Each structure stands twice: as structure tokens, then as C-alpha cells.
Image (tube, rainbow, N blue to C red; front, side, top):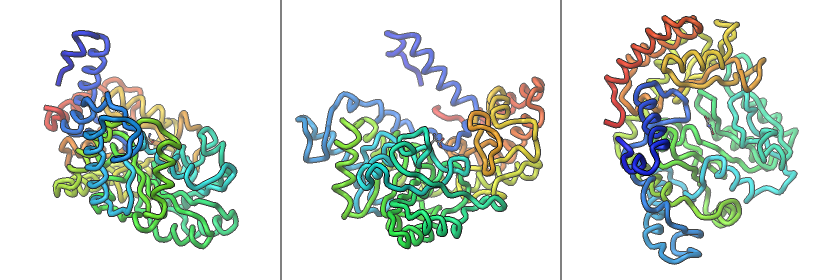
Length: 415
Ligand code: DSN
């Protein structure tokens, strides 16, 4: 893959783009929210639809010349409907956060009450963090995972909801490695006379493939990202029953966004089409198996894996018991120098800051896309352990870099 046309007019940007291709090819991408989309999705995203304004929805736009934009958006909607079985799908949100914003804007008034998982326990900024608009517009209280088990404390959540009387309960998480029991949270929301938003941003692909239970048809609203485990065009999606369809559509446009990013919608259409193929289900299964192998490999090497393992695509490690003097930030930096890219992450019972937390989060969606199997994940666990156990040792980093290069060469990405 090259960027000759960019290079002809802008060598500096071409250098950066080619540097990024090389970085993705030659290092292990283990940030749990990232993936490698297909060349077809890349092509759709970089298509001439980037030139088109198409405010409105298919068949009802504010500009002319939208026939092909309509075709693409209808395909994205049809395919998402088939994948998830929702009554209504809006594929225009620019991101998962903007998908969430649409639900809040459609259903809540400023000052309404939001009950969501604490960020350090696996929640997301757009679920009510003080630095986010949600924390500033709404009255937010947060629930937590059980400190002993690392699993969601469903009974604690029910008690909290009964006391707080939220207008909306938010489920769905960014750093929670276990299966979510949507029905239990829905029951809690109903008992509190609250709505339920399930944000499946991280596990959209696992839900689409049926390897994680779906909240569609259970929660009132389901939002997601479209570029993480589902590997389609970059952005977000909102799903709901027909009764909320008009409210959600108006909240996305004109409520929160202007013109949709039609090139990204095209990428979503192509990626959703790929996710309807049977190979995608196998991919999603392998993603989870690889995460289990990674969790086992790390636990075997003495690391404290939060909740003792994983049911999805990510593994969260609390470094405090095994490596008390190494922060998540130290580990992230040392690993990156060894060509293993993941992120330092807060963990339940966090005692440090979000900028330099006590854990790391690692995901398998991207490595699985490039062909890594459970045996490779055992090797990857070993590489991670060697670096974290000697974060300042240049020889260890160099040796790990060499092994990473071999693994990458065996599993080429964009050939
Ligand atoms: N930044 C994403 C993540 O890494 O989980 C969520 O928005």
C-alpha cells in the first residue's frame, strides 16, 4: 500500500501515512478498541462520498444529488438490521459517543438522572464522567463492579437504582471483560421506571456474530461503535424500537450533527456486509478464544487478571499485586518500545490517577484479524510478561522486538 498521489502533493503527510502503515504492520496492535478493516472498507471510506453533503435521511434530504448517498445509507441500514435484528437503525452517528449523545438528547432533559458504571470500573467517558458533557448536563451516580470478583454487582446496581430513581440506566462497557446479563439490568431499569441504554461499542462485532448475548430487543436503546470488534467504517450506530425511531433520528440530525460522513457510512455498509458472511462468526469466536488464551497466559505468569479471565475480546490486568512499582503507564511505554501497543488502564479499586493508572488493558480483535491463533497468544503473553517484569531492560526489549517482527512477518496485514 502506498500513497503516491498524496506524496506528489504533500510528502510530509505521505511520510506520516506510510509510517503509520509500517507501524501497524510491524507491531502488535492490542488496544482493545482497535482493529484492522479490510481493503474494501478502506476504499469505501476514502471514496468520493467524502465530497457529498446529505443532511437528512434516505428519500428525504435537504440537498439534491443524493441518489447514491441514499443507496449506500439504505444498504448500511438493511445490513445492520439483518445483523442485529433491531426495529430501527440509525447509521449516521460520527462516533459511539455521538450515538450515546443522541439517546440522551432524545430522551433526557438537563438535570435528569443517569446511573452508569464508574470509569475506573470499566465505564466510558460518555456515560457521565465529570469532564464529559454527560457529567455536566445530568445528575450522575455510578455503580461499580464487585471488588472481590471483578464481576458486575447486579444486586448492588438494583439497590442503587431503587434508591437513586434514575431516568436512565446505562450498561455496556469499555474495560469490562465479562459477559453482560442485559435482562437483569433491564429488570432493574424497569423496576426504577427508568430507560435502559446498552452501549455495546466494544462488543458490537461479538454481538453481531452471536458470540455475546445481544441487548437488542431487551434494552430500550442500543448504541455501538462500528469500527472496533465489528471492523466496519469508522463511527457509531443507534438501534431502538419503532416507537423511538423519530426521536432518535431527530436527535442525531439535526439535534447533534450536521451532514453525515457518507464515506464512513459507505465503510459501514461494506463492513456490515462482511459481518454477514459466515467467516465473520468464526473471526469473532477466534477473537474470544485468543483473549482467553492471553488471559490464561498472563495469569500463568503471575499477573492478576481482573475477574480471573475474560468472556470477550479484552483482558484487564491489575499490576499492583505482581509489579507494585510498575504503573500502567510504565508498562505501556516499555511495551511500546518493544513493539507491543496497548494502553495503561484504570482498574477496579484504582489507587493511582487515570493518567498513570495501575493496570493495562489488552485486546485481541486486531491480532485475530491478521491471523494470530491461541498458540501465538501464548507467545504474546510471554512477550508481555518479559517486558513488564523488566521494564527498563533494553536487551529484553530488543529480544522482544525481534520476536514481534517474526510474528508480524508470519501474519502479514495489508499484503
Ligand atoms: N477510546 C475507546 C476505547 O479505547 O475504549 C472508547 O471510546
